[in-house]
Length: 240
Image (cartoon, rainbow, N blue to C red; front, side):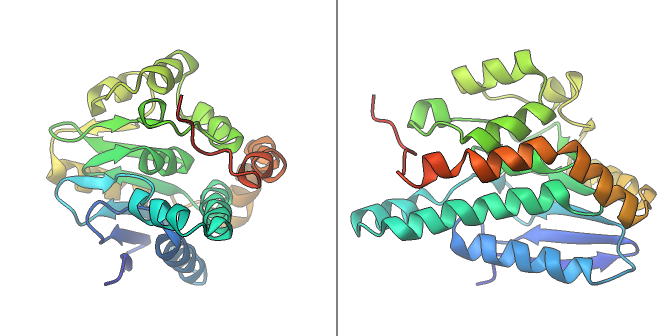
């Protein structure tokens, strides 16, 4: 089964995540990067919206069953390759030459919430779903690059609480501090308002891409230089 699909609605490319909890694994990274490549080839697209087909989840993060299986098989290189792959997803979004908008119509947790923070803008429905980082409770510290772009999306005092407590936040709470562009009343309002916003963003790709390259140059440098120091020795999990 396909993990995602995309369609064009006027000037907007809508990527729909179609795999239930939309967990991240090598199939996800390959499909996501391929979709972004295809979309960029269409000169009629000026923005990208990411939504889920699941009524409950936008994305629940890394596919822990996949990564646990690879650990049991002692396939360490597969885990390294996946971590570099998901970093390529983050960098592609951070540097994408048009607006990328997370349309959060369900829970966004862990790596799912991290992906949303790599996006340029975030909308979420207010009547269902939580946005949170459970890494503190499951023993998976953020990579240095993740920390860098999470802090570009979330005010420091809020991020400090989110990272160190694992607290679940509602759309309204995070819209109030600027993490979300808007907390929308329900799913219907969410889709309508996200799409209207996306259609309003008709920026020239050249200057938009250059603006993002300059804005996020330090973040990308951290991903490229600091993350391998954690990925190569596989310092990803903590038991104590």
